[in-house]
Length: 532
Image 1 (cartoon, rainbow, N blue to C red):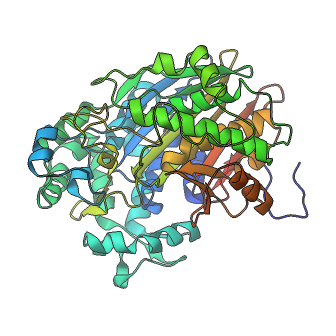
Image 2 (image 1 turned 30 degrees about the horizontal axis):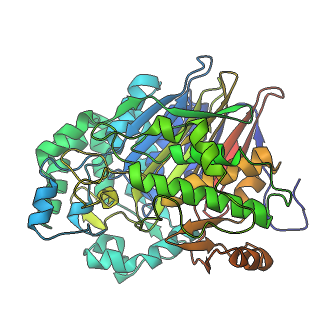
Image 3 (image 1 turned 90 degrees about the horizontal axis):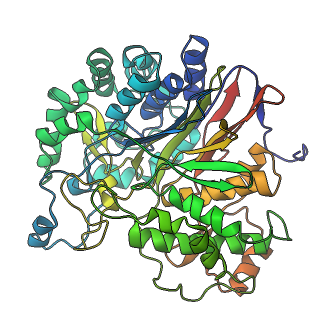
């Protein structure tokens, strides 16, 4: 139990249904859908659509989507990959002829065909009770009428003014600057696009005037995308077999590559070979071990992770007990590994913005849902007639011939966004996730061990200060005690204080024994968990 003398908030309890999102209006939208007969998936789609309007720096219909859905009574977890693909003309030969050795995050070449809208439609057709015609109405209203900008959104927006100016995105700089907290921001062009999708389905996004507007916008900036590429996006989303690890009596589920969810399982598997740290959840040994496990896992990610339909990703080996035990044996409680065996930490593009949400309905269906533009405002390229801000997921590709994650026609890039699902005895017990680009596997494994190994409640487990090994540095939030930081430095880590806090988590625990739902939501964002 938390100390009620100190700032913070308690877990949220309910009995019939619950949602946890990064914006209050999105959480309320999800509850409205549940109370009006929708299931957890319906509520997640409606809430996500609202977030695409009112948290526009983090997500949008010009982005991608992944989902884990556990229908009650089935014992199954369904995984959907809604990540978009590179243009058919995006060959490494073309980029080499242009003398390009790396992609630019604000370039049209960093834009892959958005996968979100096709993903939503595919999920609803398979598991929903309602359609886009009904579920998009709240988002349409917020886009048309406008909605007050919240504090964290305004803080992010101001930091991204330079990107928006660079790409001439004046519609997102009213009066020449980012809106302030409390300013009402409307997106009439986006509202019209959403109306078309509500009426005609995903086809209204991938074909016709919207697709033509997006393609024309990208081609004017040198992009290789065509309307034919967008038409292919209408059938892009795929149900895939999730990857899983049995850990501390639970089964942890993740989407498979091209996403980085297997890193969560690798870190949990490594740490499970070690005794719980004697100094507890906030201790130096606990933090050090987690940092070292992350360094090892991310080393392997950057060597192997890519689109498994085009290259061989050794998922089975990376998750084998023998391999994880061998990696855990490399971790010393005395000091950091000075040079990682076999490979060093690769340079990573900056880790950025995403929205994660989860919903559980009265029947016990559980939905873990994530949608993203990747970096803040994605590429910063706005298709003005349709109001669609475009992601920069292609920035995750390499322009390195022979690398598994090298760009190629119709290929999906290595993806950072990862929903999580916890099962026990064939029943969902917790949808969970931590947004935050590259940080997400560390964030998920940090949260799970906080909660289930070190005994924090679900909200405390999200609140606990965070660390992240990144580009050879150890990025620490201001909440990490100074003595812990100093001791980690003495062990060979190189700490640096970060301006932005790491990630944002949501989770809902399904307590079947007591008939309750218990929710936690990220204090580093504007949202909350609510139930009824």
